Length: 268
Image (cartoon, rainbow, N blue to C red; front, side, top):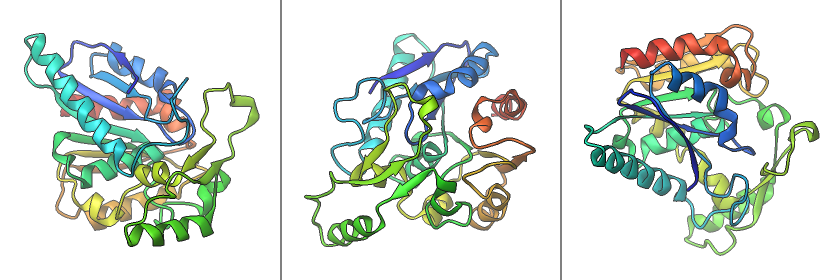
């Protein structure tokens, strides 16, 4: 798995997972800031099926492969630290939009304890979660009938058609440059979202910071607090903050998001 690495003197390592359709370059301003401030080393992977030249754009080998890839990445990062004579790093799993959904899936899976904290930026929690606008505000075009059919086949152990595309993205022509990924197979799309978002979120016992903007076009940002509070009633290290005026992408690229992330990372 290709990734961009932003060096820092910090022993914290923040892994940031990009959203649907794009790749790790979306984090460049934020990752550069975090590393230069000495808050954390930052690793921004191009998830399998994404990036400049993936082997199969928009597809992976099996449902759950993203989690296996991320676990391998964490092991590699810890081994690299040991080779440098450093103590094991504090691993923070973060993500934006669908990348935030993947971070939630990771938290609820077999590898969730590999992360010491979670940072979620306007996460896509699930298509029917109370925080998600219909079709993500027009960004996504799901093939609903196909998704239902393939889900039924999966429920009886049939995966032979999981390679079929099941969703397209309405990325504006003006921002396309040939490295975007405009459609996902069923197995890739399934791997991006939590299995059961209530169970996966409830599994988070580590520190959690969720940031969203009040002007988010794809999510009902004002509903994150109630959802997280209901699912993590005993996690006093879980924080949700709504930042005024920020859109879905601004929660990544705007300087206004940086003070909250800075304060949180320093306190870990």
